[in-house]
Every structure is written in C-alpha cells, then in structure tokens.
Image 1 (cartoon, one colour):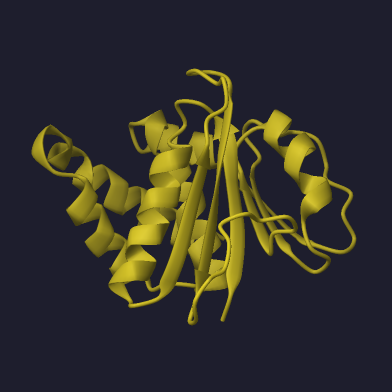
Image 2: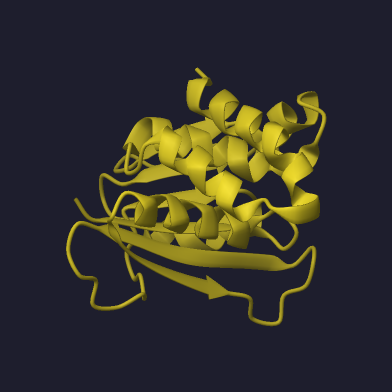
Length: 177
C-alpha cells in the first residue's frame, strides 16, 4: 500500500520531526520510505514542510506532486498544499489555527484542535504528535506501536524526558473523536 503524505506548518511546530518519526516507524516495519524535508529560507515562525512516501515496494522519487494525504498545522500551509491533494484524499488540519471552513467535496476533511489538545496536556509543542496520532488512526499506514518504538529511538539523551509527553500526545490524537 503506497501512501504519499505532505506534512506542513510553521517552523518550530515539529514538522520535520513528525516526518522523521513517521519514516522511522515505517522502517521499523520493513517498509520502503522516502523523506524529503523542505526548509527553504524559513526560520522559526516561517513555513516548513516535508514529504513522506511509504510503500511496500521500491519508491522511485521522493517528490510528491499530488499527495494522498495532507497533515496541515497552519493556514498558510493549507492555502499552499490543499490544491495539490488527490481527489478522495485525506486532509487532517489543526482547527485551532485554521478557523476557516474547508469547502472540499472531493476529500475527507478532519478538523482536529491539535494545538488546544497539546496545550491541555501541558506542552503546546506536541501539537504535531497529536495530529500525527489522528492521521494514523484514520490511515493506519503504520502501527501505533512502531511509532512509539520510533519515539524511543529518536528521543535520547536530554530529550528522553519528553518521551512520556510525546507518547501521551500520540495516543490522545489517535483516540480523539
């Protein structure tokens, strides 16, 4: 099963970490993965995005023209990437920062108040992981356990103290109704 995903938001929202985490989880499961970050001239507060392709077979290019799914954490990213989403695709958006209604008849739109959920958990910085949890609950492209395993591999040293918070954020997003 091939899945092409673009993850986008402000610099500082953990966009690249989310892509790396998902890629690592797919590799744990023995899947083929490409990860293509795009920083451009962005700095914290500017926009950032990454492309992740996961497949059971070899992937020819990391470039994604028309993604199957979008994981969008801010309005500028929604404006930029929504027109590229495949018909029948999935759009998971952070409704805390994107108040506009998305009038999209040919895509499944899932509004998730990721920033609000993260703030209630005590750390606004995990909104990306909350959103990833919701995406995984819908697409099931990798197992939640693989993502938790990838979190342990990526959050080492001083960052190890963030492991519990990120686990909770992933599960909260996954279970959000």
